[in-house]
Length: 249
Image (cartoon, rainbow, N blue to C red; front, top):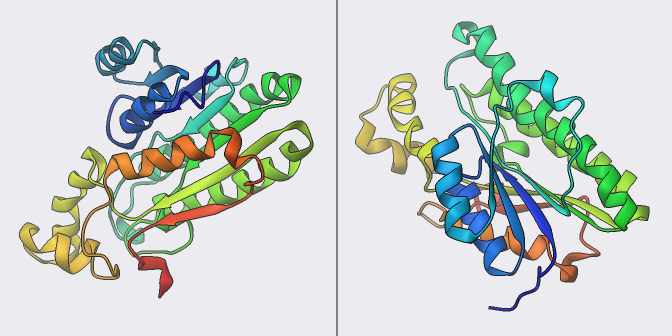
């Protein structure tokens, strides 16, 4: 594999598992020095040791601590996320605020902290793990859909402001990915839709997709690595769907 990211410093949030962990490995394999940021300190440390990177145990819900942060990174992957499934009338306002904080406010603050270094070096890659729910809506996911739609807007504004400074900003919009986050949804999806858990994958998660399987984390990570490279220098303000054709409808 080519060392296309030699000398680059990357930061991946939610980096200890799922898409984040796959992205850490993909970036490191291409030569980047990667910081694995996660609330799971043990998981972040184990993966950082595996790839020769650095672990950063951080709770991104603690946004006050992010307001004075300065980041020395060339590549920022905003990946951390959580999910709650409930009808709007039953949705806990505290859960709504938590999701917006983690998945929209925290990425804003991390981008804000990273841009001065990127601008000074006339290079930066900001890669935001959005979702097909950043461009489509689904019932029972008011907070998640709202956060991802907001992230899409933030990414585009960052692209417009960063262009003259060599900084690109893009979203990746996967469908359902084989991750702990998706696996944890199955029981909740079964409950709100009134179906057995064994039917959730076929009847809920993949019903709109042309390709009837989950996305693999490594597939998403390969796109992360390309967007981080010099080859993607003219790609900015974009949203890349990887949803098996879901959004083609």
